Each structure stands twice: as C-alpha cells, then as structure tokens.
Image (cartoon, rainbow, N blue to C red):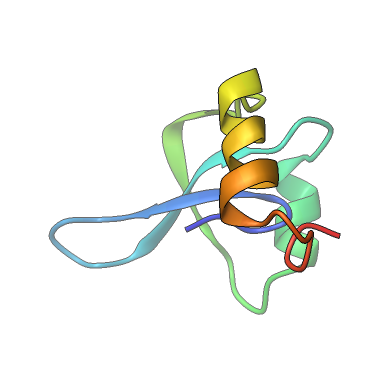
Length: 71
C-alpha cells in the first residue's frame, strides 16, 4: 500500500500492516503523528526510491494523461 508518507506491506502470517519505506524527507515520527495507532515498523525500514523516468512517463501519459489523480 502506498500513502503520502510511505509504503506498507502486510505480514504473511498475521496480516498486520507494516511500514516498509518512508518517502524522502519523511520520518517515522511523521508517520506516527498521522496514524491513529502505533504502526509496525520493518526491521529493514528504508527510503522509498524515486520513480524512474519510465515510471513517470507511464503515469503521466498512459495511466493519468488528464492529471485527474496526480494533481
């Protein structure tokens, strides 16, 4: 799952949502301040990689050419 602050995965056994990466400039404290519960944090928490030029092209030209979701 992708949010404005980071990305999450789900534990295969418990189904619990786990913070996997934070977006550039976002801290775990920022995430905590915007959640209604204490998030589970991955042991190998990383930073979300920036999208590639091809990923941006796909979003802008093919998935959302009118900018309905990305503006």
